[in-house]
Structures are given as structure tokens and as C-alpha cells.
Image (cartoon, rainbow, N blue to C red; front, side, top):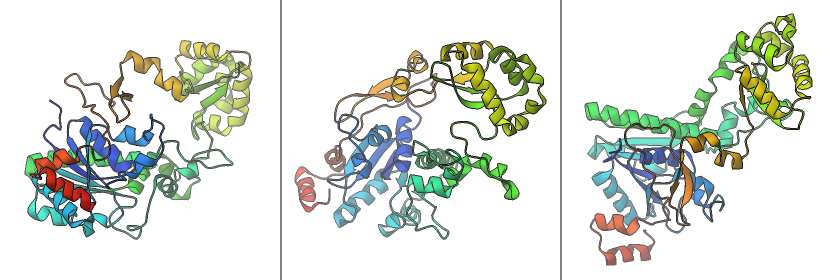
Length: 393
């Protein structure tokens, strides 16, 4: 039995933040009913067609869900949605435009009047209050507002993160807050309103650069793939043109690096590099020494020396190399899930369980479960056909 088996989540969602949160609830066994617009669906369905005709974001964040198409502006569809929530939902999640669910009568205040144990999680760019409450937000914009872009990239060019980290952060905090709310309800019977802000989620992740620049101090410099305040920690070229990533965290490792990797033991006693702050300050000089030492070695030889010295290191893998990563293969972290285009590989959720296994059901086609869900509510085939003709479902 999975941990959330018996829990039903109704979600009005699109893009990444809410779908990522609810997919993780589905991974734990919750029934997730995804409300989508008839004929269009979650707009993430149209982001690309990279997964055999299906959008990559959508495949990633929507497995194990049921797709119910409803035009929530249609009175009949609104009645259906409220009936599902009233009769079946433990949790309602939404990341629609600010104010949209309140106008539909789906706010926590409205729903809790007749269902006091309901848990409602609202996800938005800036939260449900404050001067930015009604401001539209997308991932890159929140990366900018939270200061992430200002400390990322090179000295000349700021940069965003590759993945949608603001969406992912918000989705993770929505997921954990919902789990906490379910525990709270189990103990007290009380429902909960959860207000998740993408800005607050990503600002939490900005703790290190914020504290580093406290009281008006200068923020960490943008240093590309190198660490701004620890050195050496980043990419270094080897003599064969390949790149090796390495990182030092303490003085014991610095000494081993000098003696066994660079094979220049005198460097360990060089006053210019006597502590991490001094090594950061002398980054240019130390970089030249390291690059020169590695110039006569292949990447494999550098890695062998790093391994012998027990210095942390890594490859800069391509996506193809991650698909084939030997550690993921050895730990059997890949499985398959169904999609409307057939089965595709899928990474198991992080965390190996000693008891049970996560749910890994198919990614739904648009409206795939509409008829079945409506039948469960007592609608006959002719009624469903009439609703479809009206554009309600």
C-alpha cells in the first residue's frame, strides 16, 4: 500500500509548479484528477513535441494522473467541479491566474464552509497578499526577482538556470506543505489553506548569497561554473581538451591536492594560498598553476590522481551520458511509463524504499478519463454527450 492511497487531489493546474507538486503526490499513491480545458488542456502540452510527439515538460510532471476536461466558465462544468470537490477531494491545488479560483467560488474560504477538512493549496508568483499579489509571473521572471540571475553566469553576462528552478522550488514546497497539512488533519480534523509563492520559494534557496551580502556587503561574484567563494572548485581543462570538475572543501584536501594531484607539495605552504579566502583572492594566480599542471595530463589521468587523493570530482555529462549514467543504471533507477505515444523511460522518484514502491502509471491523453469520472458521478452517456456538445466538457 502506498502512503497516500485513499487521498484524492483535484487540481486546476498548468505549466510546472502545480503539476510537479501533484505528480509527487501521485507518486505516493494519491488519486490526482487534473482539470483541463476542453480541446486545449494544460498549456504545457504545447511547449514542444520532443517525446514522440508529446511535450517534454508534460511527460515529466503528469504521470499517474486522470485528465478530466471541463470548461470551468460553463455553469454545468462548474457544478460538476464543485460536486467532485464536495464528494471526493481531500486536497485542491491550483496555480491559475491570481484571483481566478476565488471568482469561481473555489477559494479555501468558500470550500471550507461546507467541507471544513478540505486542504487548499494556492501557488502563485508572489503569494496571495502584498503589492505584487496580482502580478503575472513565470519562472525566468522569478529567477530575476529573487536575485538568482544577478549572481549566476559569467562576469560579463548574467544567466538563468537551465531547468525551471523557481517552478520546481514552488512545486517542492507545495508538496511538502500539503503532506504536513494532511498530517495536521489526521491529528486534528482541521483543514488548511496553503499559500505558496514562487518568489518566497526561490528566495529561500538564495540564503547563502543573501547572507554573504548582509548589511550592504558585496554579493558573490559571477564566476561561471566555478564557485564564487570556494577555490579551487569548478571546471579545469586537461591536456586532451576535455574538462574535469573538481572541488576542495577544507585544508586537508588542499594539502592532498598540492601533494598528490599537482605534485607540487611546496604550494601547500605558500602564504598566498594559506586559507580558502586567500585562495579565492588569488584565484587568477592559482588557476594558472592548476591549468599548467593539468596541461600535460589527459582528463583520465587527472581524475585518477584526484581519486587517489580522495578529492571530489565529476564529469560534465551531456544528456545522452546522463541517460546512460552507470550509477543510475547500477541502482536500477530507470523504469518505464505509458504515454499516448507508447512507453517511455522514466526516472524513479528520488529515495529508495525498503517497503513498497512509488506509483508509476501512465501520462494521460487530454480528457482521457472524462467519461469514466462523469459516470462515477451518475451522468449517463446521453448526458455526457450533451455536455460535450455544449462545450462544457
